[in-house]
Length: 113
Image (cartoon, rainbow, N blue to C red; front, side, top):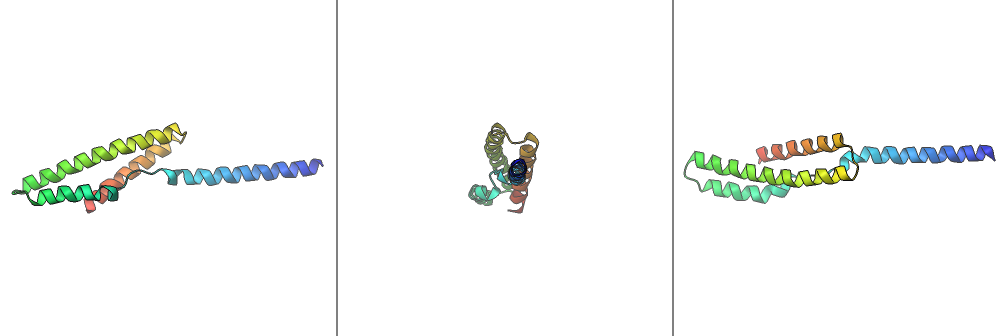
């Protein structure tokens, strides 16, 4: 009887550990922040407006203003998501890392567009 209880206890411990490890490895993947592809239409509108400009400086100013506005919008949205993840008890370091990674990805995709 004692051997059976020990065996069941060990099995339960292994099951708990497996669930903990699996959920721990998927936490990073659960952090979702808005991607540039969601802002593509907005970018296209700024690009079309810039094409109508008469000088290169005006063209650059329009695109710079668009990027600043779009990035500010991204940061507001991402900051809200980051706070939500922190309230849910996720690791602050992991959330901040994912936030920074997502921001760098957004900016990289913007530069490629």
